[in-house]
Structure formats: C-alpha cells, structure tokens
Amino acid sequence: MPPEKRVPTDGDEELAALEEAMKEVPRGAIAVAGTSVVLLMLCWWAIYLFVFLPRGSVG
Image (cartoon, rainbow, N blue to C red; front, side, top):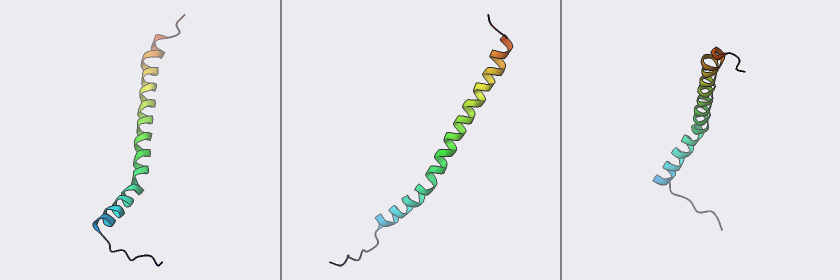
C-alpha cells in the first residue's frame, strides 16, 4: 500500500518550530550550568580567602 500524501497543517509548522527551538536548548542549558558552577567556585574561593585564611591555623 503506497504512503498517503499528507497535507501540511498548523501542527506541522508548530512541530518544525519546536524542532528548531530544541536545537538551541542544549547550548543554553550548558551555559546556565557552567555559569552556576563558576559562580559557586568564585563564592567558595571568596570564603576561603576572606574567612579561613585570615584566621590562620587553628590548633
């Protein structure tokens, strides 16, 4: 049985737009994750430098 010819619908346009948007999503997720890790590390270093080091050795 031959495949039926499909008539483009609004759903096809929405699906194409969704597929186009999903090409960009992983890059954005990686950017957000990378930014949050960098901020976390900066905060950790700030605490280390301004809280732990000035106290000196304890003991």
